[in-house]
Image (cartoon, rainbow, N blue to C red; front, side, top):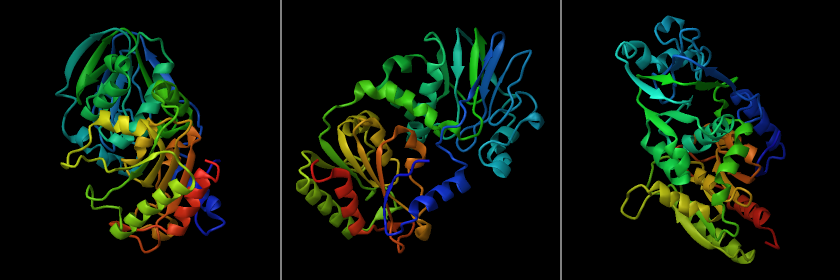
Length: 374
């Protein structure tokens, strides 16, 4: 099992990391079995009933009703499987589906052609769309002929992402509403993974790279530092230390002769507006190195040349779990990309709101990533 490069004083950190991964996430992100595909050939119907941390959906025809994790009975919720995602809390998460009588109010829409249906957790969250949805979706469409269109729950964020990275793929998407029953005149294909969230499996990342490779810049020229200052109250680096971190990065760029510009990215414009998705893509396409705390702004490294980019992420250790769940970082979800991935822990006095790192380990990480002959 792979680990990121940790920069800390604990010689057993790899073992601690792997033990935590196995215990808490049952090897999320490793190469489990591929999801199986179910194809409905006649009078097929599909509906999405909930979103967010739960993802109730139904696919059925007169002969078969899809069942298993994430799938619910289209007519009788007592026959539904609530085992997906958060186990014993699933019924609470499916409260909207159970109590709203949404099935009885469902409006049907007929579509002609062959379709793939895809739905999973956090359909409207920028970070989850990047590291969960897109790799799975790209794998899914690779399994079927190009004439298949895609059924997705409406999401302004996901629609903008797809529009900006692949216009042809965007035009193949049919965006539907919660509670809308789609009657497909043609074949309908749905997928069901062995365990949620299988969305994070290694097996999808090669398809993601294939889709993105035409956008790779071969000689990227920016070192990007992600700052959470002024954009959120949570996990913000101590202001004085952040200035020292930036100073140290610039010094090391000079020392290692890194022929790049240094840029700070917060995710917001000087006017306090969110940076347009197209602009975020453009900024990170030119990333030589991406450095900063865990957060959705950092996951933008997925727009860079994934054969080249170096990533240095600040995350909580076991000792500073007050910040966030220990080891919470993007390595677990993206390890199938085989990136030059490096991590530094917050210091033990960090908390949910104000964080620090050890500058000694920052120097070690920068020296390791950039080397003497970079």
